[in-house]
Each structure stands twice: as structure tokens, then as C-alpha cells.
Length: 372
Length: 232
Image 1 (cartoon, rainbow over the protein chains, first blue to last red):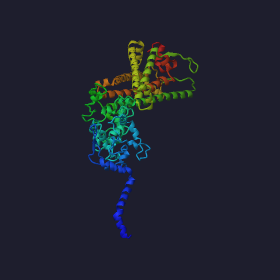
Image 2: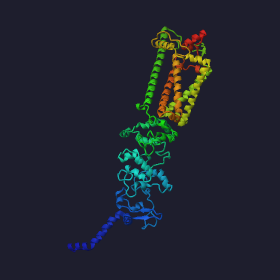
Image 3: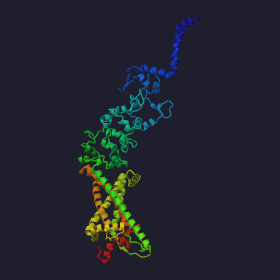
Image 4: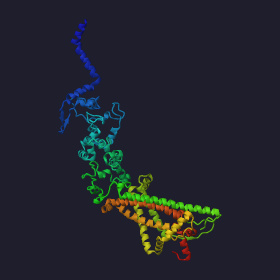
């Protein structure tokens, strides 16, 4: 066969065969799953694909194929997670995806080797989920389903600044309170120091406030707030005194709390938990006009006298006024009394020694006059 | 009683049984108050934590402190009543009044001790130092009781007075307590129990009597009066 003859043969018969071989060669490394993806997307890739359950609930079933490819799970395929789906159309309603198929310590799937899944199991959400509460969030409710991104990615649902919205999906009232609070407003202005839900409540280990292990349990609230509020470097940026933590710890409330009296006021008892506002805001629970009501939550009958005086008082600072001067006066009095006492004792001992020497010089053996 | 050199020494009555009991109750009250009070003031320290835990925690400490306060108040009330009805108390009270002679005696003692000038002054039933300590303690107890009363029921106090008043009472209560404590521990213990040959202690607070030679040295004027039969 001439060269021309070979070329003609390729054009006429071998080219389609080559194309089939090439397509096969491309699909085989992707495996059966990739072929399945194509099958899945034949329905789920159609925008507007949805199903109405017998209960009347509408399930939006469209999946943007591009979103998965941009996510941390870009190498995964539909059935890697939707493992219970094997037939089309599905004879049974597919189950919610169980992330734990890969996300456990020691997994070989390449998922991060972390214990957060175990933490989640002990959390208020995990326990509710295990107890059959269908409203309790699972992983995908916070992290998203197909478009899961690392927490550091600004587009991620769990990126710090997006967290309040994510939690707010279920916790609507608290989200509204937080948004209007000094913390929420700061976050919306781009202040990265501002705490979001997880800063106080934790992430996977969120526990109810009644749980002794919770970071927002009455015994731990002060420590949780102190993580930021005791840091001068952070607080001075916003004109907030870092000493508020120490002054609380030195107060009767703080000491009682330290010794396990959980009914004693902690930060949130007065400042509230979510709608924290500066004291000069008339809506603030610590605005002088509202102090009687705030104190009255624990001390029924609290009146305007409760607001007459500083709350976070630091006796070592001039801002404490007369308290500072009284403390200083007593300090000087006590120290000078101590000094006078040492002089007094010193003189006693000096005279005793001189008298003894005098007696020895004079050859006396009798005991001396004892006093002074 | 015999001295180390074998010579027997007479004993002089210094405190009646009643006074010793009151002194004991006062000592107990002050020990309770100081321990439970300092534990609160220094709550951040390990020893204070241990003390508060021993007293049954935060509420237990408050109960112990208030028990001590009641004891101290009882001593105070007894002292007041006795000063009115008892001739002996009235005499002692009279002896405790500061007089110009105390200043002169104090100055003489200072000169004697520093420069060795003259003779050690002869004191009466109470030395000038003891008088000074006594009145400071009386004043201290008054201030402690009043400020303590304000702190006893924070809610009632806050309803009656501005919060700043309670803050002031707290700092006075805490600072004055530490001042009085130092005064008692260091000064009274030194003067009455350690110095002047009394070491290791003046037994009068237990037996009511002290050694005649020490009594003569420490309360020379009273000794002279006793010898003359015209006790002060």
C-alpha cells in the first residue's frame, strides 16, 4: 500500500475507531463513577429539577455540576457521597449524606485527620441529631453540600464573617440581636477582631449553656469573654478597658463565680449574651437608666441607687475617686505603722543589748530591769 | 513560782477570770474574722483558696465571717455594758484614758532607749502604748462593725444608699481590717507577750497573773500605788 493508500484508509475507516479508543481511554481512568456522574446529571443537571414529596415539601434537586468541581471535593463523584443510590430512577428516597464515611481519624480517602466529628457527636447539635431531631443541623447544614470550600476562603459558608448568617439560618432571633449588637455591627464594618457565634460558642463542640463543659456555661462565660476582653492590645483599639475583666474578678460577683456559685452574675447576666450594646446606648442593658431593671433580674426591687456609682471599680486607679484615696490612705497608714513598729522593736532590742553590755563591763551578773 | 536563778517570784493579779474569758472570745472572733476576711481579700492565692474551700466555699466563708462578726459584736456589747455596771471595768477604763503624763513617759522612754538618758519611766495599769492600741482597737471595731453592717446585706444597703457608698464601705472594711490586724499581730504581741522579758508570753491572758518582777518593771507606777495601798 502506498502512502496515499494508508492515508485514505485512516480517513475512511480507522478514524472513527481511533476516536472510540480515545474516548474509552479518557473515561477509564475516571472510572465508572465519572460515567455515573453523567447519568446523575442527566436529571440533576437540569435547572429547576425538583420533586414534591407526599408531605407537600418541595425538594430542589438541581445540582450545578461546576460547583462540586470548584469545591474541596472536586475529585469526588456523586455516588462517593450518595452511596445508597444505585438505581435510576431511585426506588427509595436517597438518604442524607453521611460525611463520616470519609471524615474520621485514620481514613484513607484523603479527608483531614481530625476529631471534629467526635466533637460534633458530643455537641448540642450532634446529640439532637442522634436523638432523631430532624431540625438539628448535620455537617452540610453549616458547611454547604456541593460547594464546600475551606474556612479560609471568603466564599465559604464557614468563613468567619459568614458564620453569623449560617447560624442565623436557624437561630433567627439571636441573629437579629447579634446583628444590632456592638459585636455584630463591628463585624459588618469589617472589624476582624469582632467575635462571631463560634468565637464564644465553639465550632463542632457547641454545647448548651446548661452543660458544665460549655464555653457559655455560667461558670465559663467570664473566661470566654476574657479571651478577648482581657487583652489590652485588642481592647485599646476600640476604647474598651481591658481591666474590666480584672475588676469583675475582684468583685463579689466574680469571686462567687470563681468559687462555683453559678447564680452569681457573670458578664452576660448584665451585658446580655447577644444584644450587647455600649453603656451610652439608651437601649443597652447597662445604660444607667436600665441598671435597676438589669440588677432587678437577680435582685428584685433594685432601685436607682444601684446605678449611682461605678460598676467595674478599680480601687488602684484614680478613676475610683474616694475609694482610691481611702485605699491609698490606709496603705500609707499601714506601712508607716509597720515602719514605726520596726523602729519600736529595734529600739527595744538596742537598749536591751546596750544594758547587757554595760552590765558585762561592770561585772554585774543580776538580770536587768526588764522594761523598757 | 521560781525563776531560773532559783529565787522564788511572787505573782500579781493582772486579769480577772471574766476579763480572760472576754479576751479569749475576742481573740477567737478576731482569728475567725481575719482568716475568713483575708481569704476573701486574697482569693487569688492558693492558701486563700484552700481556706475558703475549708470553710465550705464562698457561702461557707461568708457564714464563718458573720459568725466571727457576731462574736465580736457580743464582746463589744459586753464591754459597753460592763463599763457601765462594773466598778472594776470603770476603774480599768479610767486607767486607759490618755493623759499628758503618757506623752511625757513616752518621750522619756524614747530618750532612755535611744540615748540611754535617765531612767525607764514607770507606767501605770496600762502603758501609753497599750492605751494607744486599746483606743485604736475600739475605733477599729466601731468602723469595722458599721462598714460590716452595710456589707452584711448588700441588697438592703444598695436600696438605701448609692452604690458608691457600699464601695466606700468595702474599701474601708478591707483596708482597716488589715491595718488593725497588723497592729494586733505585730505590735500587741510584741509589747505584751514577746518584749520586756515576757517571752514566750505573758501568762496573764491564761492564768490572770504575771510575775511580780516583770509587773514591777512594766507597771512601776501601779506597783508603787499598790505598795502604798492606794491602787489607781
